[in-house]
Length: 293
Image 1 (tube, rainbow, N blue to C red):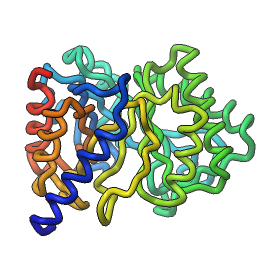
Image 2: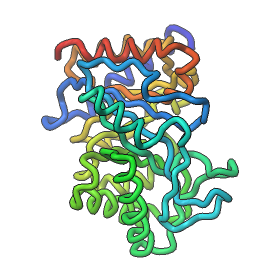
Image 3: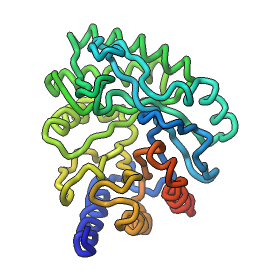
């Protein structure tokens, strides 16, 4: 990205975050979140540097309502992250050693096991919800997890059905004491935005964080102000792909947001990619977030 384009993007990013802030969310946060386990390259929780002065969320990627042969299961979720290296005992160990760590799982993702798109494809709202609550409660309690992230990117349902399924799922898991927080991970795509906008309109009150995938943009920010009242986290992809990578002005933008009281946190895709980079940008991100706010 040329220098002038970087400056334009930094301005657009800071304007977007400022515009989505409200009296309930307009303050700096020390929240750092990172996806882990999708690429099966052996990364472990213990590989990552954890600054004790941040709130640190690992997000296991992914749980999908598909079989291992890529057949949709209508809400019966299975684990598709690296279970050889990211196990229930390892979740307990990293949380025991680091009281500031919480661990969540992410639903959906881009692809099913066979590499084809992982569609949100419920048979009906009620049947999907019944299956999802039961299967996810079992996984979450088995792994001693704290929250969920919604990262469906492909859909064979209407936005309204998606909103009811996901909104009621999050509400039920919270009401049952199974999770304490939930996030969504939208990006700038017409179909994606229509589904997440419907979810936000009906159930935004139960969503705690927005992991907005700024790195998925091909050009400047055009997103409308859909996420007012919650914490919109800024993001980068650690292999540098995207509009504003960690070497392309990302930390300049974050510093400006922090100076204005609008840095609500940082999330990263992904620990798997960062393993070979020595987690340089994770260290920089956490150091910035840990500065007194």
